[in-house]
View (cartoon, rainbow, N blue to C red):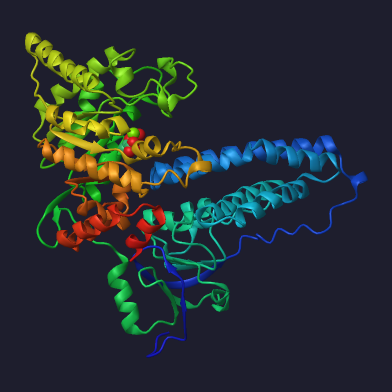
Length: 568
Ligand code: PEP
Ligand code: MG
Protein backbone atom coordinates (compact mmCIF):
# COMPACT_ATOMS: atom_id res chain seq x y z
CA UNK A 1 0.00 0.00 0.00
CA UNK A 2 1.21 3.51 -0.66
CA UNK A 3 -0.42 6.89 -0.50
CA UNK A 4 0.47 10.56 -0.38
CA UNK A 5 1.05 10.39 3.33
CA UNK A 6 2.90 7.77 5.36
CA UNK A 7 0.81 6.40 8.22
CA UNK A 8 3.49 6.73 10.89
CA UNK A 9 7.01 8.01 11.22
CA UNK A 10 9.60 7.38 13.94
CA UNK A 11 13.05 8.73 14.64
CA UNK A 12 16.11 6.95 15.96
CA UNK A 13 19.84 6.84 15.28
CA UNK A 14 20.88 5.97 11.76
CA UNK A 15 23.48 3.20 11.79
CA UNK A 16 24.19 2.70 8.08
CA UNK A 17 23.96 5.35 5.36
CA UNK A 18 21.54 3.20 3.36
CA UNK A 19 17.77 2.89 3.06
CA UNK A 20 15.54 -0.09 2.41
CA UNK A 21 11.81 -0.90 2.15
CA UNK A 22 10.21 -4.21 3.06
CA UNK A 23 7.72 -6.16 5.11
CA UNK A 24 7.95 -6.16 8.87
CA UNK A 25 8.90 -9.28 10.71
CA UNK A 26 9.08 -8.86 14.48
CA UNK A 27 11.91 -10.75 16.07
CA UNK A 28 11.04 -11.83 19.59
CA UNK A 29 13.44 -14.62 20.36
CA UNK A 30 11.44 -15.74 23.39
CA UNK A 31 13.84 -13.59 25.27
CA UNK A 32 11.17 -13.27 27.85
CA UNK A 33 12.99 -15.96 29.68
CA UNK A 34 11.11 -15.62 32.90
CA UNK A 35 11.19 -19.15 34.18
CA UNK A 36 8.49 -18.92 36.79
CA UNK A 37 9.06 -20.02 40.34
CA UNK A 38 11.95 -22.50 40.77
CA UNK A 39 11.05 -26.01 41.94
CA UNK A 40 11.61 -26.94 45.57
CA UNK A 41 15.22 -27.54 46.61
CA UNK A 42 14.48 -31.21 47.37
CA UNK A 43 13.53 -31.82 43.71
CA UNK A 44 16.92 -30.68 42.41
CA UNK A 45 19.95 -32.93 42.14
CA UNK A 46 23.04 -30.74 42.49
CA UNK A 47 25.42 -33.05 40.62
CA UNK A 48 23.03 -33.33 37.63
CA UNK A 49 22.55 -29.56 37.52
CA UNK A 50 26.32 -28.97 37.64
CA UNK A 51 26.71 -31.33 34.73
CA UNK A 52 23.92 -29.65 32.76
CA UNK A 53 25.64 -26.31 33.31
CA UNK A 54 28.99 -27.72 32.15
CA UNK A 55 27.40 -29.22 29.02
CA UNK A 56 25.66 -25.94 28.20
CA UNK A 57 28.96 -24.08 28.55
CA UNK A 58 30.67 -26.56 26.28
CA UNK A 59 27.94 -26.21 23.64
CA UNK A 60 28.06 -22.42 23.98
CA UNK A 61 31.81 -22.45 23.29
CA UNK A 62 31.30 -24.59 20.18
CA UNK A 63 28.51 -22.33 18.87
CA UNK A 64 30.58 -19.23 19.55
CA UNK A 65 33.55 -20.67 17.71
CA UNK A 66 31.39 -21.40 14.63
CA UNK A 67 29.80 -17.97 14.75
CA UNK A 68 33.20 -16.39 15.20
CA UNK A 69 34.53 -18.06 12.07
CA UNK A 70 31.47 -17.20 10.05
CA UNK A 71 31.63 -13.56 11.14
CA UNK A 72 35.36 -13.31 10.45
CA UNK A 73 34.73 -14.59 6.96
CA UNK A 74 31.60 -12.59 6.19
CA UNK A 75 32.41 -9.35 7.99
CA UNK A 76 35.92 -9.19 9.36
CA UNK A 77 38.31 -10.11 12.11
CA UNK A 78 37.63 -7.03 14.17
CA UNK A 79 33.89 -7.71 14.31
CA UNK A 80 34.47 -11.39 14.98
CA UNK A 81 36.45 -10.51 18.10
CA UNK A 82 33.22 -9.93 19.99
CA UNK A 83 32.68 -13.70 20.04
CA UNK A 84 36.01 -14.11 21.80
CA UNK A 85 34.72 -11.73 24.42
CA UNK A 86 31.59 -13.85 24.74
CA UNK A 87 33.75 -16.91 25.24
CA UNK A 88 35.56 -15.04 28.00
CA UNK A 89 32.21 -14.40 29.67
CA UNK A 90 31.27 -18.08 29.36
CA UNK A 91 34.45 -18.87 31.28
CA UNK A 92 34.48 -15.83 33.55
CA UNK A 93 35.55 -17.22 36.94
CA UNK A 94 33.28 -14.88 38.89
CA UNK A 95 30.19 -15.67 36.86
CA UNK A 96 30.92 -19.41 36.83
CA UNK A 97 31.45 -19.34 40.57
CA UNK A 98 28.16 -17.58 41.23
CA UNK A 99 26.26 -20.03 39.00
CA UNK A 100 27.85 -22.94 40.87
CA UNK A 101 27.05 -21.38 44.22
CA UNK A 102 23.41 -20.93 43.18
CA UNK A 103 23.26 -24.58 42.04
CA UNK A 104 24.82 -25.62 45.33
CA UNK A 105 22.09 -23.64 47.03
CA UNK A 106 19.47 -25.86 45.38
CA UNK A 107 18.60 -24.06 42.13
CA UNK A 108 18.32 -25.84 38.76
CA UNK A 109 21.03 -24.73 36.31
CA UNK A 110 18.84 -22.36 34.23
CA UNK A 111 17.62 -20.50 37.33
CA UNK A 112 21.18 -20.32 38.61
CA UNK A 113 22.34 -18.81 35.31
CA UNK A 114 19.51 -16.27 35.34
CA UNK A 115 20.43 -15.22 38.86
CA UNK A 116 24.21 -15.14 38.39
CA UNK A 117 24.04 -12.78 35.41
CA UNK A 118 21.70 -10.29 37.09
CA UNK A 119 24.34 -8.31 38.99
CA UNK A 120 27.01 -8.06 36.28
CA UNK A 121 24.36 -6.96 33.74
CA UNK A 122 23.05 -4.33 36.13
CA UNK A 123 26.60 -3.10 36.81
CA UNK A 124 27.39 -2.56 33.14
CA UNK A 125 24.00 -0.99 32.51
CA UNK A 126 24.82 1.61 35.12
CA UNK A 127 28.03 2.66 33.38
CA UNK A 128 28.55 5.42 30.83
CA UNK A 129 28.81 5.26 27.07
CA UNK A 130 30.23 2.19 25.45
CA UNK A 131 30.74 0.32 28.70
CA UNK A 132 26.97 0.14 29.03
CA UNK A 133 26.86 -1.82 25.77
CA UNK A 134 28.80 -4.60 27.47
CA UNK A 135 25.49 -5.37 29.19
CA UNK A 136 24.22 -6.46 25.74
CA UNK A 137 27.08 -8.91 25.44
CA UNK A 138 26.33 -10.35 28.86
CA UNK A 139 22.64 -10.71 28.01
CA UNK A 140 23.63 -12.45 24.80
CA UNK A 141 25.78 -14.95 26.70
CA UNK A 142 23.12 -15.48 29.37
CA UNK A 143 20.37 -16.05 26.78
CA UNK A 144 22.55 -18.46 24.87
CA UNK A 145 23.11 -20.52 28.02
CA UNK A 146 19.43 -20.36 28.92
CA UNK A 147 18.41 -21.51 25.45
CA UNK A 148 20.85 -24.39 25.64
CA UNK A 149 19.57 -25.34 29.09
CA UNK A 150 15.89 -25.12 28.21
CA UNK A 151 16.25 -26.62 24.69
CA UNK A 152 14.85 -23.39 23.29
CA UNK A 153 14.59 -23.26 19.51
CA UNK A 154 16.89 -20.94 17.64
CA UNK A 155 15.24 -18.53 15.26
CA UNK A 156 17.11 -18.85 12.01
CA UNK A 157 17.86 -15.26 11.15
CA UNK A 158 19.92 -16.36 8.16
CA UNK A 159 16.78 -17.73 6.47
CA UNK A 160 14.42 -14.76 6.65
CA UNK A 161 12.31 -14.17 3.52
CA UNK A 162 13.74 -11.71 1.00
CA UNK A 163 12.53 -8.16 1.58
CA UNK A 164 12.27 -8.48 5.35
CA UNK A 165 12.43 -5.45 7.57
CA UNK A 166 13.41 -6.89 10.90
CA UNK A 167 12.16 -5.12 14.02
CA UNK A 168 13.40 -6.10 17.45
CA UNK A 169 13.83 -4.71 20.90
CA UNK A 170 17.55 -5.19 20.47
CA UNK A 171 19.83 -7.35 18.35
CA UNK A 172 22.85 -9.00 19.87
CA UNK A 173 26.12 -9.33 17.94
CA UNK A 174 25.51 -13.00 17.20
CA UNK A 175 22.02 -12.27 15.94
CA UNK A 176 23.15 -9.41 13.71
CA UNK A 177 26.00 -11.46 12.29
CA UNK A 178 23.50 -14.00 10.97
CA UNK A 179 21.58 -11.47 8.88
CA UNK A 180 21.87 -11.97 5.15
CA UNK A 181 22.06 -8.62 3.33
CA UNK A 182 20.36 -10.21 0.31
CA UNK A 183 17.30 -11.02 2.38
CA UNK A 184 17.11 -8.32 5.00
CA UNK A 185 16.11 -4.98 3.52
CA UNK A 186 16.77 -3.28 6.83
CA UNK A 187 16.33 -3.47 10.56
CA UNK A 188 15.32 -1.18 13.38
CA UNK A 189 15.62 -1.67 17.11
CA UNK A 190 14.03 -0.16 20.19
CA UNK A 191 17.36 0.28 21.97
CA UNK A 192 21.02 0.64 20.90
CA UNK A 193 23.42 3.36 19.81
CA UNK A 194 25.71 4.03 16.86
CA UNK A 195 28.54 2.09 18.41
CA UNK A 196 26.47 -0.92 19.49
CA UNK A 197 27.61 -4.13 17.87
CA UNK A 198 24.35 -4.34 15.95
CA UNK A 199 25.11 -0.96 14.36
CA UNK A 200 28.74 -1.84 13.65
CA UNK A 201 27.80 -5.16 12.06
CA UNK A 202 25.04 -3.50 10.01
CA UNK A 203 27.65 -1.16 8.54
CA UNK A 204 29.98 -4.00 7.76
CA UNK A 205 27.20 -6.02 6.16
CA UNK A 206 25.76 -3.05 4.29
CA UNK A 207 22.29 -3.41 5.82
CA UNK A 208 20.15 -0.27 6.28
CA UNK A 209 19.60 0.13 10.02
CA UNK A 210 18.15 2.51 12.57
CA UNK A 211 18.75 1.85 16.25
CA UNK A 212 17.45 3.35 19.47
CA UNK A 213 13.98 4.24 18.15
CA UNK A 214 12.42 3.78 21.59
CA UNK A 215 9.25 2.03 22.70
CA UNK A 216 7.19 3.71 19.97
CA UNK A 217 8.66 1.18 17.53
CA UNK A 218 6.52 -1.47 19.17
CA UNK A 219 3.36 0.08 17.72
CA UNK A 220 4.39 -1.11 14.25
CA UNK A 221 2.54 -4.28 13.31
CA UNK A 222 3.83 -7.52 11.86
CA UNK A 223 3.42 -7.47 8.07
CA UNK A 224 3.39 -3.67 7.74
CA UNK A 225 5.33 -2.08 4.90
CA UNK A 226 8.14 -0.03 6.33
CA UNK A 227 10.99 2.12 5.08
CA UNK A 228 14.15 2.11 7.19
CA UNK A 229 16.35 5.07 6.33
CA UNK A 230 19.71 4.63 8.01
CA UNK A 231 20.96 7.94 6.70
CA UNK A 232 18.16 10.07 8.12
CA UNK A 233 17.71 7.78 11.13
CA UNK A 234 13.99 7.32 10.41
CA UNK A 235 11.48 4.48 10.23
CA UNK A 236 8.39 5.17 8.10
CA UNK A 237 5.26 3.02 7.97
CA UNK A 238 3.50 2.93 4.56
CA UNK A 239 6.02 5.18 2.84
CA UNK A 240 4.87 7.26 -0.11
CA UNK A 241 5.84 6.32 -3.67
CA UNK A 242 8.41 9.09 -3.72
CA UNK A 243 9.97 7.84 -0.48
CA UNK A 244 10.08 4.26 -1.76
CA UNK A 245 11.70 5.28 -4.99
CA UNK A 246 14.39 7.18 -3.19
CA UNK A 247 15.05 4.15 -1.01
CA UNK A 248 15.28 1.85 -4.00
CA UNK A 249 18.01 3.95 -5.53
CA UNK A 250 20.05 4.17 -2.37
CA UNK A 251 19.67 0.50 -1.35
CA UNK A 252 22.39 -0.91 -3.53
CA UNK A 253 25.75 0.71 -3.42
CA UNK A 254 27.07 0.67 -6.93
CA UNK A 255 30.08 -1.56 -7.53
CA UNK A 256 32.71 0.55 -9.19
CA UNK A 257 35.18 -1.55 -11.09
CA UNK A 258 37.38 1.37 -12.02
CA UNK A 259 39.62 3.34 -9.65
CA UNK A 260 37.86 6.33 -8.09
CA UNK A 261 38.85 9.90 -7.32
CA UNK A 262 37.55 12.52 -4.92
CA UNK A 263 35.06 15.09 -6.27
CA UNK A 264 38.00 17.40 -7.01
CA UNK A 265 39.97 14.71 -8.80
CA UNK A 266 42.47 13.19 -6.36
CA UNK A 267 42.82 9.51 -7.25
CA UNK A 268 42.74 7.14 -4.28
CA UNK A 269 43.52 3.46 -4.56
CA UNK A 270 40.95 1.20 -2.90
CA UNK A 271 42.27 -2.30 -2.45
CA UNK A 272 41.27 -5.46 -0.62
CA UNK A 273 42.60 -7.36 2.37
CA UNK A 274 42.75 -11.06 1.54
CA UNK A 275 44.11 -14.28 2.99
CA UNK A 276 43.18 -16.80 0.30
CA UNK A 277 42.62 -16.97 -3.45
CA UNK A 278 38.86 -17.25 -2.79
CA UNK A 279 39.06 -13.85 -1.14
CA UNK A 280 40.99 -12.51 -4.11
CA UNK A 281 38.02 -13.53 -6.27
CA UNK A 282 35.58 -11.79 -3.90
CA UNK A 283 37.78 -8.69 -4.09
CA UNK A 284 37.56 -8.62 -7.88
CA UNK A 285 33.78 -8.90 -7.65
CA UNK A 286 33.50 -5.96 -5.25
CA UNK A 287 35.49 -3.73 -7.58
CA UNK A 288 38.82 -3.69 -5.71
CA UNK A 289 41.62 -1.88 -7.55
CA UNK A 290 44.03 -4.54 -6.29
CA UNK A 291 45.16 -6.19 -3.08
CA UNK A 292 46.51 -3.93 -0.35
CA UNK A 293 47.22 -6.68 2.16
CA UNK A 294 47.66 -10.37 1.40
CA UNK A 295 47.92 -11.99 4.83
CA UNK A 296 50.16 -14.87 3.77
CA UNK A 297 50.15 -16.57 7.16
CA UNK A 298 46.71 -17.94 6.18
CA UNK A 299 48.50 -20.09 3.60
CA UNK A 300 50.39 -21.68 6.49
CA UNK A 301 47.40 -22.41 8.74
CA UNK A 302 45.13 -25.47 8.70
CA UNK A 303 47.88 -27.79 7.49
CA UNK A 304 50.64 -29.98 8.90
CA UNK A 305 53.64 -28.45 7.19
CA UNK A 306 54.49 -25.18 5.47
CA UNK A 307 53.54 -24.70 1.80
CA UNK A 308 56.48 -25.25 -0.57
CA UNK A 309 58.12 -22.50 -2.57
CA UNK A 310 56.33 -23.73 -5.69
CA UNK A 311 52.92 -23.83 -4.02
CA UNK A 312 53.42 -20.29 -2.82
CA UNK A 313 54.67 -19.17 -6.23
CA UNK A 314 51.46 -20.42 -7.82
CA UNK A 315 49.25 -18.68 -5.27
CA UNK A 316 51.05 -15.33 -5.63
CA UNK A 317 51.07 -15.64 -9.41
CA UNK A 318 47.29 -16.32 -9.43
CA UNK A 319 46.64 -13.34 -7.17
CA UNK A 320 48.62 -11.12 -9.56
CA UNK A 321 46.76 -12.55 -12.54
CA UNK A 322 43.46 -11.53 -10.93
CA UNK A 323 44.55 -7.88 -11.05
CA UNK A 324 46.44 -7.40 -14.31
CA UNK A 325 46.11 -3.61 -13.99
CA UNK A 326 46.38 -3.35 -10.25
CA UNK A 327 48.84 -3.64 -7.47
CA UNK A 328 49.05 -6.70 -5.22
CA UNK A 329 50.70 -6.05 -1.86
CA UNK A 330 51.84 -9.27 -0.25
CA UNK A 331 52.84 -9.17 3.38
CA UNK A 332 55.54 -11.60 4.40
CA UNK A 333 54.73 -14.03 7.19
CA UNK A 334 53.22 -12.50 10.31
CA UNK A 335 53.24 -15.44 12.66
CA UNK A 336 53.12 -15.16 16.44
CA UNK A 337 50.84 -12.98 18.56
CA UNK A 338 47.33 -14.35 18.00
CA UNK A 339 48.41 -16.31 14.91
CA UNK A 340 49.71 -19.65 16.03
CA UNK A 341 50.96 -22.37 13.68
CA UNK A 342 51.16 -25.71 15.51
CA UNK A 343 53.88 -27.32 13.36
CA UNK A 344 56.22 -24.36 13.90
CA UNK A 345 56.48 -25.09 17.57
CA UNK A 346 56.19 -21.49 18.73
CA UNK A 347 57.53 -20.78 22.20
CA UNK A 348 55.16 -20.21 25.11
CA UNK A 349 55.35 -16.50 25.79
CA UNK A 350 53.96 -14.41 28.63
CA UNK A 351 52.94 -11.67 26.22
CA UNK A 352 52.75 -13.10 22.70
CA UNK A 353 51.71 -9.73 21.23
CA UNK A 354 54.92 -8.27 22.64
CA UNK A 355 56.92 -11.33 21.76
CA UNK A 356 58.48 -13.01 18.79
CA UNK A 357 56.05 -12.21 15.98
CA UNK A 358 56.16 -11.01 12.39
CA UNK A 359 59.55 -9.90 11.12
CA UNK A 360 61.16 -10.93 14.43
CA UNK A 361 60.49 -14.57 13.57
CA UNK A 362 61.32 -14.13 9.88
CA UNK A 363 64.75 -12.80 10.80
CA UNK A 364 65.10 -15.41 13.54
CA UNK A 365 63.70 -18.95 13.85
CA UNK A 366 61.69 -18.80 10.61
CA UNK A 367 64.46 -17.45 8.37
CA UNK A 368 64.27 -20.51 6.10
CA UNK A 369 60.56 -19.94 5.58
CA UNK A 370 61.23 -16.24 4.98
CA UNK A 371 63.79 -17.07 2.34
CA UNK A 372 61.59 -19.54 0.48
CA UNK A 373 58.67 -17.11 0.65
CA UNK A 374 60.82 -14.34 -0.86
CA UNK A 375 62.02 -16.70 -3.60
CA UNK A 376 58.39 -17.55 -4.45
CA UNK A 377 57.48 -13.86 -4.46
CA UNK A 378 60.35 -12.68 -6.64
CA UNK A 379 59.62 -15.47 -9.13
CA UNK A 380 55.88 -14.62 -9.16
CA UNK A 381 56.72 -10.96 -9.77
CA UNK A 382 58.34 -11.93 -13.06
CA UNK A 383 55.57 -14.28 -14.13
CA UNK A 384 52.65 -11.92 -14.64
CA UNK A 385 51.77 -8.39 -15.72
CA UNK A 386 50.34 -7.26 -12.36
CA UNK A 387 52.48 -5.12 -10.11
CA UNK A 388 53.82 -6.99 -7.12
CA UNK A 389 54.66 -5.23 -3.87
CA UNK A 390 56.08 -6.89 -0.78
CA UNK A 391 55.86 -5.51 2.74
CA UNK A 392 57.19 -6.55 6.13
CA UNK A 393 55.07 -6.78 9.31
CA UNK A 394 55.85 -5.67 12.87
CA UNK A 395 59.07 -3.86 12.06
CA UNK A 396 60.27 -1.80 15.02
CA UNK A 397 63.86 -0.85 14.14
CA UNK A 398 65.89 0.33 11.16
CA UNK A 399 68.33 -2.62 11.40
CA UNK A 400 65.36 -5.02 11.20
CA UNK A 401 64.15 -3.31 8.05
CA UNK A 402 67.66 -3.29 6.60
CA UNK A 403 68.09 -6.98 7.36
CA UNK A 404 64.81 -7.76 5.59
CA UNK A 405 65.85 -5.68 2.58
CA UNK A 406 69.22 -7.42 2.51
CA UNK A 407 67.45 -10.75 2.50
CA UNK A 408 65.52 -9.64 -0.61
CA UNK A 409 68.80 -8.67 -2.28
CA UNK A 410 70.46 -11.95 -1.40
CA UNK A 411 67.47 -14.01 -2.63
CA UNK A 412 67.59 -12.05 -5.91
CA UNK A 413 71.34 -12.76 -6.25
CA UNK A 414 70.72 -16.43 -5.61
CA UNK A 415 67.96 -16.65 -8.25
CA UNK A 416 70.27 -14.80 -10.65
CA UNK A 417 73.03 -17.36 -10.04
CA UNK A 418 70.56 -20.19 -10.57
CA UNK A 419 69.37 -18.64 -13.84
CA UNK A 420 65.77 -18.47 -12.55
CA UNK A 421 63.60 -15.63 -13.82
CA UNK A 422 62.65 -13.09 -11.13
CA UNK A 423 61.70 -9.46 -10.69
CA UNK A 424 62.43 -7.17 -7.76
CA UNK A 425 59.10 -5.98 -6.31
CA UNK A 426 58.15 -2.60 -4.91
CA UNK A 427 59.02 -2.78 -1.20
CA UNK A 428 57.23 -1.45 1.82
CA UNK A 429 56.89 -1.65 5.55
CA UNK A 430 53.89 -1.86 7.83
CA UNK A 431 53.52 0.79 10.47
CA UNK A 432 52.14 -1.15 13.41
CA UNK A 433 54.32 -0.20 16.35
CA UNK A 434 54.83 3.21 18.03
CA UNK A 435 58.51 2.79 17.27
CA UNK A 436 57.75 2.54 13.54
CA UNK A 437 55.75 5.78 13.78
CA UNK A 438 58.71 7.60 15.33
CA UNK A 439 61.07 6.12 12.74
CA UNK A 440 58.74 6.56 9.76
CA UNK A 441 61.10 9.08 8.09
CA UNK A 442 64.00 6.63 8.27
CA UNK A 443 61.79 3.83 6.96
CA UNK A 444 60.42 5.96 4.11
CA UNK A 445 63.97 6.70 2.94
CA UNK A 446 64.58 2.97 2.56
CA UNK A 447 61.34 1.71 1.00
CA UNK A 448 58.72 2.68 -1.58
CA UNK A 449 55.69 2.71 0.68
CA UNK A 450 54.35 2.55 4.23
CA UNK A 451 51.10 0.78 5.12
CA UNK A 452 49.49 1.63 8.43
CA UNK A 453 48.11 -1.38 10.30
CA UNK A 454 45.69 0.30 12.66
CA UNK A 455 44.64 -2.97 14.32
CA UNK A 456 48.05 -3.41 15.87
CA UNK A 457 49.03 0.25 15.93
CA UNK A 458 45.96 1.02 18.07
CA UNK A 459 46.73 -1.89 20.38
CA UNK A 460 50.33 -0.77 20.92
CA UNK A 461 49.69 3.01 21.08
CA UNK A 462 46.83 2.55 23.54
CA UNK A 463 48.36 -0.43 25.37
CA UNK A 464 45.02 -2.20 24.85
CA UNK A 465 45.01 -5.82 23.71
CA UNK A 466 43.05 -6.03 20.44
CA UNK A 467 41.59 -9.36 21.56
CA UNK A 468 40.42 -8.32 24.97
CA UNK A 469 36.86 -7.05 25.05
CA UNK A 470 37.44 -5.66 28.55
CA UNK A 471 39.63 -2.94 27.09
CA UNK A 472 37.77 -2.68 23.78
CA UNK A 473 36.79 0.91 24.46
CA UNK A 474 40.49 1.79 24.49
CA UNK A 475 41.23 -0.17 21.33
CA UNK A 476 39.73 2.63 19.30
CA UNK A 477 41.43 3.99 16.17
CA UNK A 478 39.78 7.39 16.53
CA UNK A 479 41.53 7.96 19.86
CA UNK A 480 43.42 11.25 19.44
CA UNK A 481 46.78 9.56 20.12
CA UNK A 482 46.21 7.04 17.33
CA UNK A 483 45.08 9.76 14.92
CA UNK A 484 48.22 11.75 15.68
CA UNK A 485 50.33 8.66 15.02
CA UNK A 486 48.58 8.24 11.66
CA UNK A 487 49.04 11.92 10.75
CA UNK A 488 52.69 11.76 11.68
CA UNK A 489 53.24 8.63 9.58
CA UNK A 490 51.60 10.13 6.49
CA UNK A 491 53.69 13.27 6.78
CA UNK A 492 56.94 11.36 7.28
CA UNK A 493 56.15 8.96 4.45
CA UNK A 494 55.44 11.74 1.98
CA UNK A 495 58.57 13.66 3.07
CA UNK A 496 60.55 10.55 2.16
CA UNK A 497 58.72 10.14 -1.19
CA UNK A 498 56.94 6.99 -0.09
CA UNK A 499 53.27 6.50 -0.75
CA UNK A 500 51.22 5.82 2.40
CA UNK A 501 48.33 3.41 2.69
CA UNK A 502 46.23 1.94 5.47
CA UNK A 503 45.29 -1.72 5.73
CA UNK A 504 43.91 -1.91 9.28
CA UNK A 505 40.13 -2.25 9.79
CA UNK A 506 39.81 1.50 10.17
CA UNK A 507 40.32 1.93 6.41
CA UNK A 508 37.12 0.00 5.65
CA UNK A 509 34.78 2.15 7.68
CA UNK A 510 33.07 4.72 5.46
CA UNK A 511 32.49 6.86 8.55
CA UNK A 512 36.25 7.56 8.62
CA UNK A 513 36.87 7.92 4.88
CA UNK A 514 36.72 11.72 4.78
CA UNK A 515 39.02 12.05 7.79
CA UNK A 516 41.52 9.60 6.29
CA UNK A 517 41.49 11.37 2.92
CA UNK A 518 42.03 14.60 4.85
CA UNK A 519 45.00 13.06 6.64
CA UNK A 520 46.52 12.44 3.21
CA UNK A 521 46.36 8.66 2.72
CA UNK A 522 47.05 7.51 -0.83
CA UNK A 523 45.64 4.03 -0.54
CA UNK A 524 42.97 2.24 1.50
CA UNK A 525 42.81 -1.52 1.91
CA UNK A 526 39.88 -3.33 3.53
CA UNK A 527 37.57 -6.35 3.62
CA UNK A 528 36.08 -6.71 0.15
CA UNK A 529 32.48 -6.12 1.30
CA UNK A 530 33.19 -2.56 2.36
CA UNK A 531 34.88 -1.51 -0.89
CA UNK A 532 31.77 -0.26 -2.75
CA UNK A 533 30.69 1.94 0.17
CA UNK A 534 34.16 3.44 0.66
CA UNK A 535 34.58 4.05 -3.08
CA UNK A 536 31.22 5.81 -3.12
CA UNK A 537 32.20 7.91 -0.14
CA UNK A 538 35.48 8.97 -1.79
CA UNK A 539 33.71 10.27 -4.91
CA UNK A 540 31.72 12.71 -2.76
CA UNK A 541 34.71 14.17 -0.90
CA UNK A 542 36.32 17.55 -1.57
CA UNK A 543 39.92 17.27 -0.41
CA UNK A 544 39.95 20.84 0.96
CA UNK A 545 36.98 20.04 3.19
CA UNK A 546 38.52 16.74 4.21
CA UNK A 547 41.79 18.43 5.15
CA UNK A 548 39.95 21.06 7.15
CA UNK A 549 38.06 18.27 8.96
CA UNK A 550 41.32 16.45 9.71
CA UNK A 551 42.89 19.68 11.04
CA UNK A 552 39.95 20.30 13.35
CA UNK A 553 39.97 16.71 14.56
CA UNK A 554 43.72 16.69 15.20
CA UNK A 555 43.21 19.54 17.68
CA UNK A 556 40.87 17.44 19.80
CA UNK A 557 42.10 15.59 22.84
CA UNK A 558 39.25 13.19 23.55
CA UNK A 559 37.66 10.42 21.53
CA UNK A 560 34.19 11.83 22.25
CA UNK A 561 35.13 15.15 20.71
CA UNK A 562 36.55 13.35 17.66
CA UNK A 563 33.36 11.34 17.36
CA UNK A 564 31.27 14.48 17.47
CA UNK A 565 33.13 15.90 14.44
CA UNK A 566 32.70 12.62 12.59
CA UNK A 567 29.00 12.43 13.33
CA UNK A 568 28.41 15.97 12.17
C1 PEP B 1 46.95 -4.46 11.39
O1 PEP B 1 47.63 -4.74 12.38
O2 PEP B 1 46.25 -3.43 11.30
C2 PEP B 1 46.95 -5.36 10.22
C3 PEP B 1 46.37 -5.00 9.10
O3 PEP B 1 47.53 -6.59 10.39
P1 PEP B 1 46.79 -7.82 11.13
O4 PEP B 1 45.38 -7.42 11.41
O5 PEP B 1 46.91 -8.97 10.20
O6 PEP B 1 47.64 -7.96 12.35
MG1 MG C 1 49.02 -6.36 12.30
